[in-house]
Each structure stands twice: as structure tokens, then as C-alpha cells.
Image 1 (tube, helix red, strand yellow):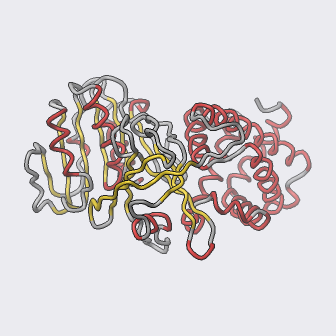
Image 2 (tube, helix red, strand yellow):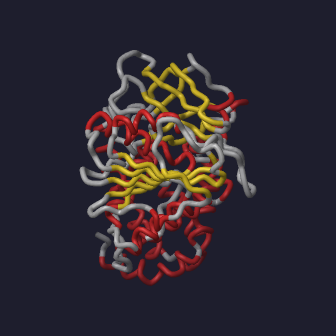
Image 3 (cartoon, one colour):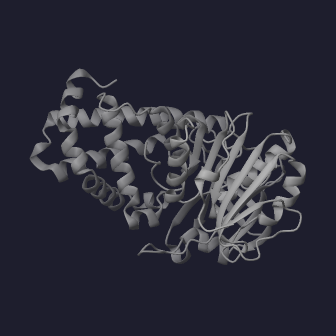
Length: 403
């Protein structure tokens, strides 16, 4: 808990810090990267370029301070778990937290100037270290559970044993441990980080990809969409590398599987809602249920540009044969040519209509797709009475959904 004296200072200064949060975090990243350019290898340069990373950090620190001072009723356990899983997938270590703390607090002083008295600096330093200690403890448990030795490397070499072009912009890679043996098991909804070295000695970049294959197989599968820059954002460095440079026989560096979301959602009725490449955890879930719980009542609702863009679509008929209670709803902006032999599906033209999603009593829901899509669907489900705790979702990038 925050000390009484620090709580009073943080409460008084929270509005000012909140108002200048992005300026502070922007200055923080500049300072830290200038002093430790090697840390650029841990951060998504696309999110740095768009400002998404600094916005997410600012909101997280301010929200945590509000949590400590009782200024919000937001539950923090799930948020800390989500951050810890992302950190573990990047190989963040406890020794890096002092670096972050030093530059973050220095940035507060540089942006707010004389308003940062020794008392104010000490209070916000206490906020930071309470947050850091909670994350360090969670990350240590995650590393232990993944078999990563204390202080040891997260990364392991994996060999590309198969490659399938799923659509014009999507490719699947089959991966096996380079040292031999079977791939570790995973829970549908978990993801792995892939670290690649950029051309021309430009350092390393890391991205997370959901595991899209069957849990329990002797290999892992990731299904990667090429990221094309829009609105001034750069093209995806890692997705472009995986599409253009990686082929069968190559080696990739992967993290263990991490992720705070179990896409299977317990044992009752399950609604899987996805859009675009967000289908990957849903496909792992269906493959898992076909092995472990084939009689379960499941609805897959997926939205895409058209049938040709719908990656892994060809796997649905076989999954439906093994899952007799699997209903499939598809929304395509262009529904021409949407029929697929052997697949029983309700196909609609246009954008997804959340009002048509079935909601059996006690259903669990998993969402994955663009932020705007998940906000639309989640808001509709909440209005229809689905408790928030029954709606799981995955955001690839900084931040969480509102509320």
C-alpha cells in the first residue's frame, strides 16, 4: 500500500500528472533510448512511431496511481496479469526496472519543472516501485512456470518445418524445436514472441503471434498477416520479414507460450467472435475442443473482407465434422463465392451484426480482432446482459479495451 504521506501528495498531484502524461512518457522513452539504445530491441518501433506506446504507458501509470489512492474502482489484478504476460514474452528482467524508474522519474521532473518538489518526487517514486514490485513478482512466477531458469534466456531456437500461403496477405509457419523433441503444450489463446534481426544491423524486433494450431501437437503453428502501414504508420517490420525472407529450414527465436486469456472459457456454451487475423486463437480452440470436448456447444462468428481473405477457412469443414454442435456464422464485405463444400454456415454480406450473435444461458465469449471491432461487439454483449467477466479478449499492441 502507498504510505499515508505519499498518498496525500499523489492525490494532490494526480490531475497535473494525468494532464501531462503523454508528454512525460514521450520524454521518458527519448531519455531511456538515448542512454540505453540496446533497449530499442525490446520495443515495437511501429508503436513508438505512432505514439501508441507512450499513450499506453501514461494511462497505465496514472491509472495505477489512481488505484493506490482509491480514486478508481477498477480491478487491477487482471491488468497486472496482462502486462506481466507481455513482459515475460519479451524477456523483461528485474534488473531493467531500475533503469525504467530512473528515466521515468527524471522525465516527470523535466516536464513538470519546479512543481516536482523532493516530496512529490519521492511519492511518485513510491508509486512506480509498488507497480514494479508487483510486476516483477508476477513475471518471476511466469518464468518459473515456463521452465525459464532464473536470470536465464527466454529465447529458444525453432526450425521452420512447413510453410503455407493461406491468402494473399497471410502465411502459416509450422515450427519445431531446433534441438529435437515435441513442442510444449499450450492453452488456446496463448501466444509466442518471435524475435528477428533486422537487415543492415538495425537491431532486433519482437512481435507476438497467437498459436493457431492444435494444442498437444508435436509442433507449433503461427499464422501471420502482413501488416501494411496506414495513416502514416510504417509497414510491419517483422510480418514483412516472415513473409518475404523466412522459408522451410530456417531458424527462428521464439519465447515460451504466454498469455492471460484462456479462449476455451470453461465448460459451458462458447461463442468465438473474430475478425481478420483475429481468427487464430479461435482456430486453436476449435482444434482443442475437437480432441477434448467434441460435444460442446460452440458458435464461431467470423468477419472478413471476403472468402479469399478468410485464412484457415478450408479447415472448417473437417472441424465441423468432429464438432457436431459447432455453428458457423460468417460475415463478408463481399459474399460472392462464399460457399465451401462440406461447411454448414450462415453467410451474410456486410459488417458483422452483433444482435444476431446467439447467447445461450451461461455462455462464455472470446473476442479477437481490431480494437474497433471488439469494442462494438463487447459493447453489444454487455448491453444484452453478458457479464464482463464472461467476455475474454486479446489486444495485440499496447493497452486494453475501455472499462
